[in-house]
Image 1: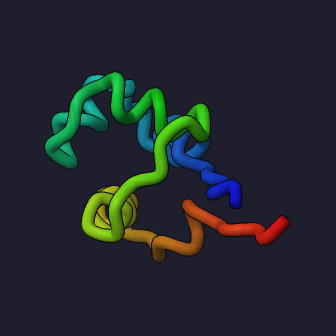
Image 2: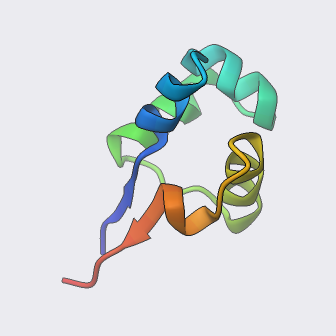
Length: 67
């Protein structure tokens, strides 16, 4: 059940690196990297924090596709 994301694309739009993104939402650079690679699915709270940084909806950044 993959959770697809466009986090890297959204980060590039505002010129923020993984470390800075992690600081903005209270997680490590490694967590941001794992989310972008699809190795880690963020909690609802973290997904909401990420969306708030971009003034976007969670579903604009994350999408779920059933297999």
